[in-house]
Amino acid sequence: MNTFVTTAHTYFILCIGVSSALLFFAPLQSLQAATLQLVADNNAYAIGQTFTAEVLIDPQAQNIASAEISLEFDSQLLSVVDIQKANSAIATWTTEPTFSNGTGRITFSGDMSQSVIAPATLITITFRAVATGTSLVDFSDVLLQATDADSNIYDTGTPASFVITAASAGLFSDPPTIMQSQSFPNPDTWYGSAEGVFRLSPPVAAKAVAIKISTSSSEIPSADEAAIFEPIVREFRVSAENVTDGIQYINLQFRSDDDWSEVISRSLKIDTVSPAPFAIHSQSSRMTDGFPHLSFTTTDDLSGIDYYEVVVADSEPVVMTADEARFGYFLKDIEDGTYVVTVVAYDRAGNTRESQMTVSVSAGWTASNDASGDMSLWTVVTPASAVSAVLLTTVGFLIWLLWSTRKKSLLREERLKRETQEVEDQMSKIFSALRDEIYDQINTINQSKKLTKKEMAAVEGLHQALTVSEILIEKEINDVKSILT
Image 1 (cartoon, rainbow, N blue to C red):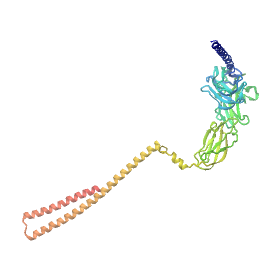
Image 2: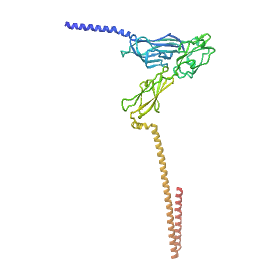
Image 3: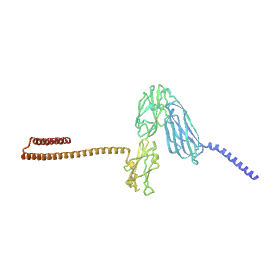
Image 4: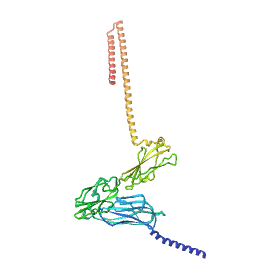
């Protein structure tokens, strides 16, 4: 009994100790969870003004391996102009930073080059104030994973609140109505040429304008006397002399009397450089009837790779996204032989880089076998072809029916003509013979005896009846012949 009590007492003390340890270490683990923060220089801006905010991560001594983050903002008050990845702690982007000014959402994800254990910048966002009010930019969906754990170690995110006020002196309006360009219509698009014209629509009260192209959207153009134009110019040209490859900003200010407006900033993305040279590598299949595998990747330091086109000999190009190209391309359904493979890389500005190589194929594939194996009725018969076939068959049948009916009618008509002619000939012969026979009998009777008046009348009546019958039959035959002709 004493042993049982002692054992139970020991278990009770152990349970109390474990529970206390759990309660003690739970807050410590919470304290060590990673946090996020959105940081900007100010929290108050005027309509039309652009500003930047950094997304910062504080690992809280955790080893952060990857991050998946989404932010939300009020798209009625703010719009995203650009997202910069420079100096980011993320080395490999599984999801490039993207944004939607329609839904007010920013998303990105990636893996760290090395485990991040100290506070670091993930992305830098350039916002533009579009309407008065207070906009909160907050973290919505966040997944932070450590190198030694699969669970989400994200704790909290500190949002940022921005107060948007009206522009001074009523001189400022949204940049799309101030600066327009047919050469560079979209500030979020990369362009492969630095040549273009911007046209200005200044406010009525404006008397001067300051124009400065800079790498920063916050630079004040009116601070440079050489950038001020008075009277106001209605357009200005950009070229390789005043813009460079990369992201720059066209900053404007208007002046009414002595009052300068807030800075109007519009991004301009130029990339005139082709993607980096690259080689195509071919790896033979381990199976005797397998096709070679091609691998090819390249980089573009400015706009980034948009897609690839793969052309085997004279075949149609196969389009692959940059993500798809990471897994390479398998040749397929081509007969044994040697082929020239051409891969063309396109960056987001439309610049290209081409690479070629000769590939030998010995998979034993033949077009005839493959075609017969894959051929089916539905690959040939489509609804349109079926309808066409029915219509053609119907028309052909009607034509054949008309031709056959006409042919039979002509044959019957020809036969009837022959029969009518034969009837006419036979009747002519019959009546001719009958007439001769009657006249011979009459002459015989006249020679043998003298006929009475009654007998003479009978002979005359027989002669007239024979003549009338011949006339009537001949008339009927002529009527039939007239119908046939």
